[in-house]
Structure formats: C-alpha cells, structure tokens
Image (cartoon, rainbow, N blue to C red; front, side, top):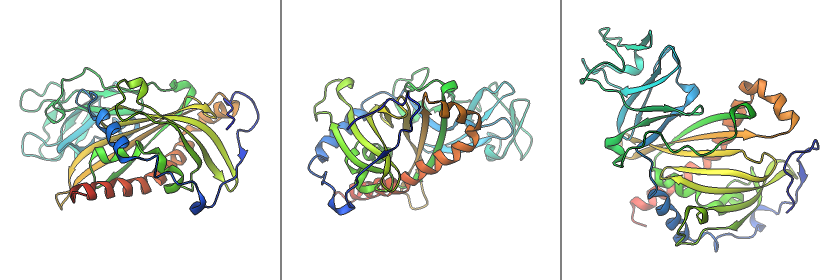
Length: 334
C-alpha cells in the first residue's frame, strides 16, 4: 500500500476495492486471545499515578459545576475566575446536598440547600482532590481508589500542537470494566469485520510478542483505509499502544492526517442499580493536517467537533457491545 504524507495540495482520497463482507480474509488466526491478554496485562502494570480522566476540558466551565462519579466517588468539578480547574467531593459536608447542583460564585461553590461556601480552603471537613487540565481533558487524582504511588501530573501522550489541530471529546457509558474497553482496542483485527462502515482492507503489519519486554516493542502497527463513501477511502498506517492501565493511544504514522491521535480513556464509574460495574469511555480525537484546507477549517472548529464526536460514538456503539459481552463472559467464567 502506498501512503502520502498529506503535504501536497491534491486530495488524499483513493479509489478502493473492498471485498464483500463475508469474503474478507479471516483474521481469527492472528487475533490470538493469549496475545491480547498478555498485552492487556502489560498495560495494567503501567503506572497511572492514581489519575482518572473526568471529562473533556470544555465540559467544565465557570458558570456551573460538573458532576460525575469516578471509581465510586462522587466528584464535583468547577473553574475559578482565572479558569483554573478544581475538583472535590460531590456531597456537601453539611447535609449531603449534591454539589453538582451548587452555584459558582467568585470561583467558589455555593450550596443550594443552605448557602455553604466551599473552595480550596474549606478545611479538613471538605478537602479538594488534585485536578489537572491538559487542554483537552480534565483529570482528577483519587489516591485511595488508585492504590498506586501518586504522580504530580497524569501521563498525557504527546499530541499535535493546539494551534495546528482540532480536538473533540466523546463520552459513552457501558456495563463493563475498564479492562474490557482496553482489550477491545488491543484487538485491531476486528476493525474491518466489526466496523465495515468505517474501515476497509485492515491488515495488522506488526503485533507485539506475548512476552514483549519493552514499551517500544509493545505496539500494534496497522494499515487500514478509512471509508468515506462507496469505493472511496483514505489509506493510512497507524499504531496502537497502551501508555497506561486505562488508556489506549492510536497515532497516524503515515498517510493523511499524520501525527493525529485518538486517546481512548476508560474511567470506572461505579455500579448500576443491578450491582454491575459501569465504565465511561472518554475518547479524545486530536486531528492534524498540514493541508491548507485544514488550516481554513480551524476557525470553524466549533462546527467540526460535533461531526468528530458523532464518528467516535458511532464506533463505540458497536465497541461497547464488544466490551460488555467480554465482561459478561468473564463474569460467567467463560
């Protein structure tokens, strides 16, 4: 397969020949469960520093607080007058009111039940959590839930520079555990079979050995064509790696959009009313291209982001079914 780096002015589209779905080459021999499980175990052994992705950065503003349960802990997040991110327990220490329904006044939370003001200096009875905003995602550090040695900041993969990229964050929730989400992404062989509307002619060029000993060797290299219309697509070469126990990184290495990344973060939420674990898939897509047309699109990024989120959620509609099925089989001991 020939690739272009996307530096020219011509369109990156290619006419593609796609076999009928049932006539594709089977990938089940290559998609060995032992290989995928070994890659998952290596990912789970990498440190997170107890950092969990909370939401997309744009979801948390200064006008009203944001609430989400992470690893069974109710969290409230908000921004002060300078835009700095803060996070703390989601229940008011006075009588347990939901602080996600509080008001933000002068950078502090004001509880709706009795007007108690809370902030970084609230004291021992209500202590905030370490929070980090990397410009795309908002993170919270929960040391009791993570159980690791804490890190001062989360491990954030290298991304294209903000002035040269467009980012969007999509969130979907499923009945599974983070490892089921990570395992889904460590199985690139399912791409053309499970997502024929988006991918064609997917070939895993290189997979890590089951006993890979270094992070450099622990990468899946894939050649794939992103389908745009019938018989038309964009061929690329991409790599998949797991920089942390709840994160999968896809990076385009050759072809159109070289340098673009997709970060898939699996955040455990808690249990539902049936006692089943729920996980939020928070996926950040950071698109980059040196083409003049892409630079012209950046001023209207607000109109592009909903399309990027739609494309991500379309894939996760199926991939969450995969992850949920994997969890159900594990629970049944199969």
